[in-house]
Image 1 (tube, rainbow, N blue to C red):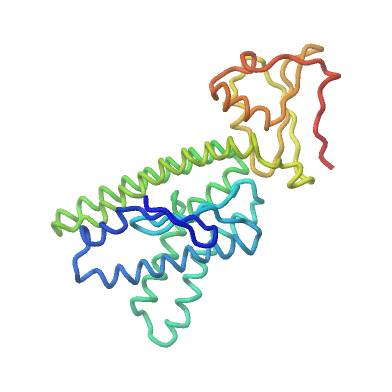
Image 2: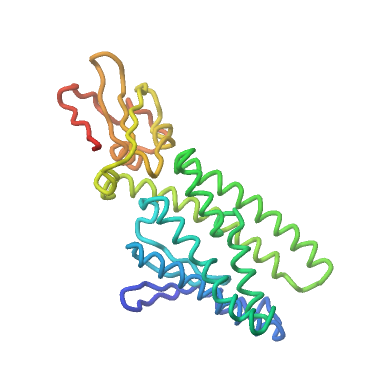
Length: 293
C-alpha cells in the first residue's frame, strides 16, 4: 500500500490499482474505465460528505483496484438512521447527478455508468452498499455478530456466482477476465471485511464510549445465564440499539456483567471460553447495575 495524508485524512492506494487497468483492460476500454473511476470517486465522496454532516469522522480512504472504501471511525456505534443515511448517500448522489445529464443527452456513457453504480451498489450483497444496509437492519434483529456472518455468506455466494458467470463469459470471449476478477475481488472483500467488522465490534463494545452515555434512552435487557455459557453466546445477543446485562448464576451466589465487560473478557480469554473460567463471582451488594432513564 502507498500511504499519505491530506488534511489529516489517511489515504491508502493499492499497488494493484495502478497495474490492473493495463493488465485487464484493452486501450479501447480505458476511456470507459476512466469514466467509471471518476463516478466511483463521486460516489465515495458522497458517503464521506454525508458522514461528516452527521458528525461521523472518516479515518482513512482506501483506493482499491475497483473502487474506494471509506473507513469511518466507530461507525457501528451510531444510530441506525445515521448509518443508513451514510450508506445510501453514495447511490443517491449517482442518481442525482445522472438525472440532469439524461435530460439533455439521454443515455450517454456518464448517465449509464452512474445508474449502474447506483443500482449495483443497492444489491443486498455484502460488501456492496445494499449488503451493508442489510447488515445494519438484520443486526437489530439477530445481533451484530450473527448479521455479519449472515451477510458474509450471502456475499460469498453471490461472488462465487459472479466468478462462475465470468468463467462462462471468458470461454465465449477469450482473454477478457474482467468479470472473473470482479467476482474474486468481491469474494476476498466479503471475507476480509466481515472478519475486520467483528473485531471492530468487539473493540467498540469493550473500549468505546458506551451506549448508555451515547444514547441514554435505549432498551435494556437482562439475561439469566449459566456459568458454563461461552462468551460467544453472550456476544451474539448484542444489538446496536439495545444494551444487555447478564446475571450469571442463581440464588444468592450470582454476579452481574455488562456487555462491555463481556467484550473485554472475550478479547482477553477468547470467545469460546466459558464464563466460569474468566470471571470471579461477586456479592450482589457489590454489583453496580447501570441505569437507563
